[in-house]
Amino acid sequence: MEEASQNTETVKKVFIQTYGCQMNEYDSNRIFDTVKKIGLITQVAEEADVLLLNTCSIREKAQEKVFHQLGRWKRWKDDKPNLVIGVGGCVASQEGDAIRRRAPYVDLIFGPQTLHRPEMLKKVSRGQKIIQTKRHARQKVRNFIPEYAFQQTQHHGIKAHLAITKGCNNHCSFCVVPFTRGRERSRDPKSILEEIGVLFGKAFLIILGENVNSYKANGVDFVELLHRLDELENLQRLRFISPHPKDFHEELADAFVTLPSLCEQMHLPLQSGSDRILRRMRRWYTMETFYEKVAMLRDRLPEATISTDLIVGFPGETEEEFEMTMEAVRTIRFDLIYSFKYSTRPGTRAAEYPEHLAEDEKSKRLQILLETQGKIVQEKNEALVGSIQEVLVQGKHYRKNSITGRTRGNHSVHIDDSCAIAGDLLSVRITGALQNSLEAEIISTSTVLS
Figure 1 (cartoon, rainbow, N blue to C red):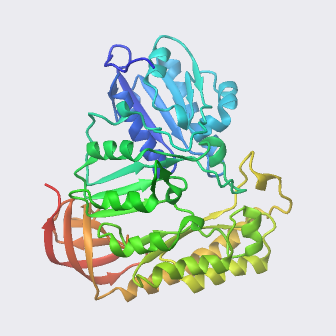
Figure 2 (cartoon, helix red, strand yellow; figure 1 turned 45 degrees about the horizontal axis):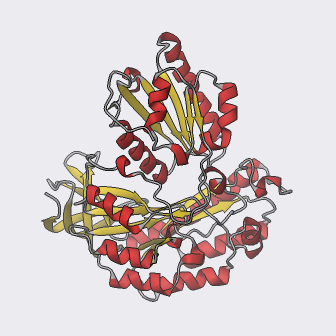
């Protein structure tokens, strides 16, 4: 690989637009770290010499969103011919040839596995067009974040994200991740700890992976890694996303009790309450086993909050099967749901299934789900009024003289008339419950970050 070096004459200013999940945000940060070796970062797209679009293809019409953005940038390039335009991420991996055909003015197309290669920008700056989208390594252990991509960089704020796995072997019938991000790879623990050496001290760490709790590398499994992270100096809070129910077991449930930094909050994607639909989704668990997983955590930590993912209107889903999902929602009483209408993703098994539901039927079911969940959240929030909670301040709220933060259960909390700053750890009493947040008054304050 060509050695990364500072060359601001070749690449003057780089702007990165990110679509998608926290993994994409993390990837964009690593692109930032790489670009800093050869250029300057700007937050103003109009003044950039290089425009990069880091994309996500999970949701329907993701490609069109990309092409709309590229159309806007094309007009800029018409006026500024030396402007470099690049598309990276999952849409680039899935639709690289289509991007080349529909948007021939794009100079650089790169997939999630090739985003840490500074020589690509150097070659583009010399007039080459680059397409590098397929580098799906088969190794189970692979340090997919090169050392140069995180060393000697500055990370601001109280929170940091850290990817420990990439890719997925589950091949759910609705999901494109195995095609766009490849097979599952786990990072060597040494590589993870080296990156943490750059990130810390931070008060709050979120570890990431498409199937994060299946992590295993060089004799270290996910629970052992959590124990090592819990020993970090200054770390107040540790969370992880996104896990798979099949890899949630007794040892991981015990970790929520024994590790002080691990927050009492779990994301456990369900997707559907129907066993038949779960099989069609290739999820490989039943509602009985899912209920067992929930009980595994709540028996140990009754106060733990649980969030989930749900898809309504999956091909062939009957009214009765949708009601099974609603029954699961009413029974488990999730604290938060991320709900979606099923959308067809090219190349997936579900795209070939018969009995696709009409859009208006999917919309109706989604509305029923949202209304039911809204009532549950309101009731659960009201039950917290009067309780004492620990809140980590994240910053100012839009209301004057107000701040916002998160409880260990990941509830959003607003506090008026406070001069606390990001990084302060507050003991608060909950005084009010809103639909999506809580209000509180401060009992005491401590500073966890200088």
